[in-house]
Amino acid sequence: MELNERAAYLKGLMEGLEISEETKEGKVLKAMYDLLAELCDTVTDLDDDLDQVYDELDAMDEDMDELEEYVYGDDMDDEEEDDEDDGELEAEVEYELTCPNCGAVTVVDEDTLFNQKISCPNCGAEFDIEFSECDDDECEGCTGCGAPEEEE
Image 1: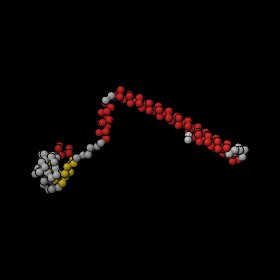
Image 2: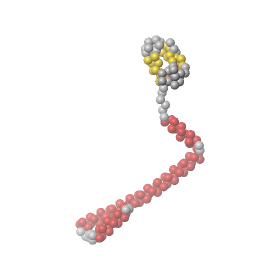
Image 3: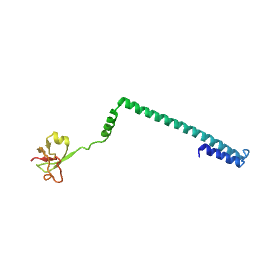
Image 4: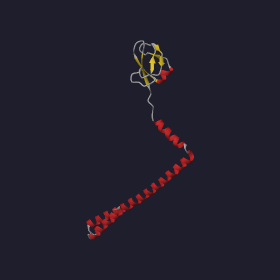
């Protein structure tokens, strides 16, 4: 039942009980009914206005989609894919190297590994890294990872 229908039902109950508006209780009940009826009308008006706003917003959204398609065309699909890719941060790859001089383990990032001479932070010895493809027999549990091998 709608709010206005429920308010009308209460009014009918009050009339059916023959509550007099001349008594104190009757005046209070009449004032409460009038307030309730006014609130119901206000809520109904607001609900109608909100429905209209939603309809207009949907129409604007459809117009905006058409405008974006006209202006950007297929580029919008590409940008959306790029945006999704930008949101994912790639994890930095790090490598553990063992110093051939003192046996200390050093962790370096990929840029350092490929672009700089490696020196041990423990003993200061410099060493080169030789890159080769791994065979299943050479690396334990590896399937051709291309992991660096140390040169002594």
